[in-house]
Length: 113
Length: 112
Image (tube, rainbow over the protein chains, first blue to last red):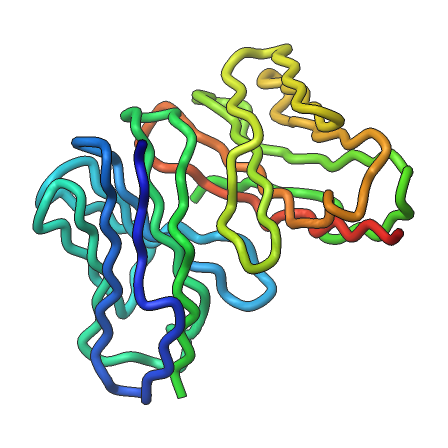
């Protein structure tokens, strides 16, 4: 069966520090991968998605970047965190290119102070 | 930017009440409409994937309908229970890309 792992679960970082959140998927190959963020009191905003190794699409201009160094690994990074980067980050995967339901990781609560 | 709207934003009902929420989305370039349930301290889980105009899906006491021509979907919960308390998210897939655009969600609280 397929599983998705996301870590860490919580993170408190000072403004200006770097960020690295990691997500890995097991039990499937060539998944679509996604990073979403829920800012306080708002819905899920798509940050990045990837349909293959090294293929990253960004949906909103921001202080963040994403990389997919391996087929089932998706990393969210920042060189210098801003206060506005605080929020709940979710990694997800879908088994079908376009239209398939998403399976979410357990999320990371990031607080930038 | 695709506009996916959900209403109401929040809803408080008594145990046993039936309720429904609305999701509106662009009616052009439709590919799929998803409903997710997000319980506190858990990850969102898919309830329904709907692709055809007129689709009706049912899972226990929860059902959903889809109108792609006018761009809306309804989620119904019959006889709400406290364990139905969660945020219900709809998400729209258009045929121009590989991404889901989520609505802001409806937060349902069912009081015993």
